[in-house]
Image (cartoon, rainbow, N blue to C red; front, top):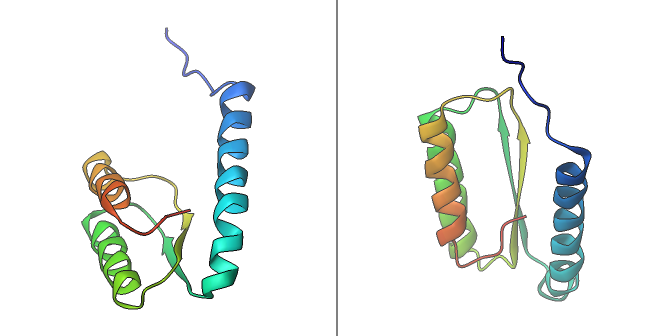
Length: 97
């Protein structure tokens, strides 16, 4: 029987460092420009979640936001919707943290 592997501590540490570096690097720029858009996503990831994220990123462009902060509180969901969300984030001209 195969057991599911938990991510190693080094992977977790890398992700935390990556997020902190992103916040620190873009933090000064955001304070100078002053506009930060926060997108809250709660519940299971589904096509509606991907649409909310995409609309939020479009709104950030219209508002000339310096950065977008995405706060996720989710147990998981559809992989296809998550891929759509990742593509939206990667294609965003505004930094997403």
